[in-house]
Length: 116
Length: 111
Image (tube, rainbow over all chains, first blue to last red; front, side, top):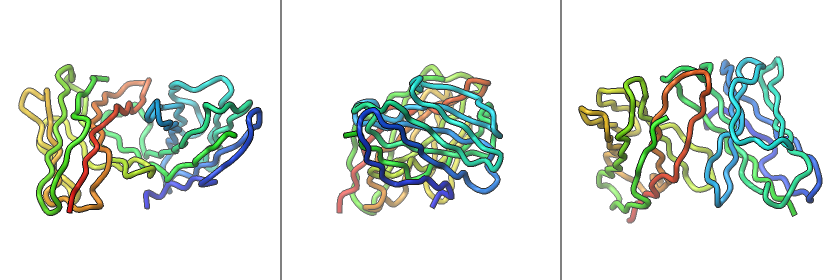
């Protein structure tokens, strides 16, 4: 158990809908990262937050947004869903800011999103 | 971040040592070598990381060559539960952080 909690574990929805994925980081960790894993793209970095502020952005679509709340949990919002958004979405947390070279990420067990 | 090259797949007998190679010939001086693994559809799991010296923890050993252009992850006594995709990642610091996962090596431990 990594200590990172993601809910829900599975989500089935239809095209055009909007969903929210939730992540609770390990106790004391200030950084939260979101990754998407699809069969053809592998693990893709989406976005990072540190202590409520966006720190780094990866290949995140404009239809996707995220935020980190004062209690440090994070939510990833996916809207206008398309079939191609079906994937595993992982959240990871770290005690560091993301700028250090000596940093370890701890991943949650993921949310499996199926868009039908 | 420097690019890494890993074999697509490897096999290992249960109880034997698994040696997973990684090439990172363009690594720069302040970049660390990280290893993560992902057991089928689970979240990636941190294994070990190092800069120059060899490192060992309860999971594995990391051997980095003197020129730092390659490294080897060693699982000393592989078990069936070690079957996973192993990712070698080279990462520096800076303000635009992202841990970039490649395709990794699928290690299959056979009974």
